[in-house]
Amino acid sequence: MDKESMTRRSTVEHLVKTYELSEKNIREGCRLIAASEKALSEVFLIGDTTRGIDFREECHRSRLNYDDPTEGIEYLRKQIWRVLVDKLEVRRMMSIQKAKELSDWLEKQSGKEDITVPSVLGFFRYYIENLETMLEEQVSEVFDILRPRNSSLVTNHKHEDVGSKVILHYWVEETYPGSGKLTTSYRWQPEYVALENVFSALDGKGSIAKHYRTELETSIREASAGETTYFRYRACKNRNLHLEFKRLDLLKKFNAIAGGKRLRKGASDAAA
Image (cartoon, rainbow, N blue to C red; front, side, top):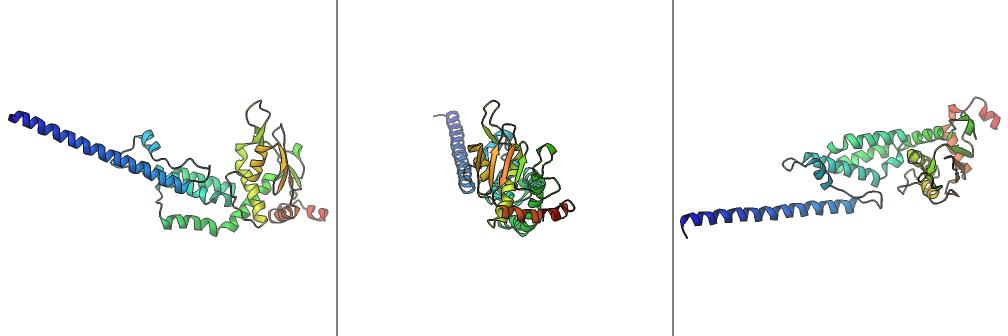
């Protein structure tokens, strides 16, 4: 074999070995990423409430910079914070307004927040320490939600205590146009959560719901009329939800906390 042939063979061997090692490393890197995604998804999975953690999706969408994967890591952190919030059911403690603020933080800022034991514990400690205040905010919001905004739907005066029956406008809708089957309106999902959480808390069972959907939502999706732990209901084709409170003791407690100075002057005396 002449010198030129030997040089060519050496070059080919170098190229092939470089490729073989690179392919091996790429396969191993991909295996590690896939294994990491699987491990995260198994740990952070909440029943059917999340589809798992997906790092590769961001890689494909934004052409991840492998020299500096900061953007991909921020996307991963954002997913993790969202699942942490869902897994520990932080939103269930919060007023609708506070929940919206949290959603804004999750969307815009959470990717830049390191995920460490101190940062996660500190995050949740804040909400736990303010649980009583947040419950009061929830009660106040639900009080406003339950008072009819349209006089044509009046079952209780907007300045008085919430009565044993209320009508909630547009809280239900058809599953799809013309189906005739009613379901809960996605637009009012935060209000469903707040309503059920408040009465659960007043019942001494905590203000944190244990399921992705409230009991009332789940029941309405199964039948247009029925009852749950705290409510009897009837969903109507005009998209109104007729709601009756089963626990009048809890309703009285609710009005005592939420009403106060909102009551129409003389209403309490007249009721007595």
